[in-house]
Length: 86
View 1 (cartoon, helix red, strand yellow):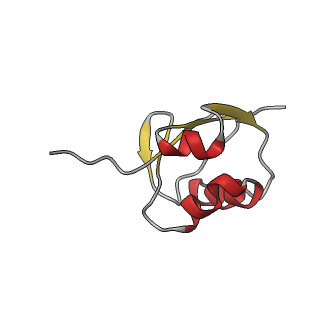
View 2 (tube, rainbow, N blue to C red):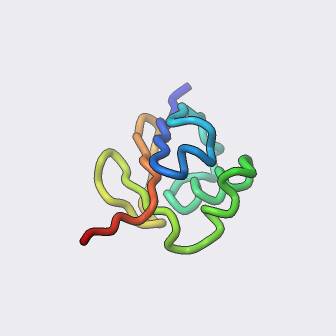
């Protein structure tokens, strides 16, 4: 089975308790937003983070992604807090 590689950065890594995982996604999880909803439902540590709009950003295959960005088997999805600069 093909998997999706999920990478967690910064405080998301702490809440998830892992830096990365390889998952086979349910057939109805086809976008970044769907992935975040599904991850939040299966992991209490991530539920609050994914439940608040704008609290988590994503990149698919190292390109910034919106909630409606499609994801497919073999993709790498990085999840991280918004980046701020000074």
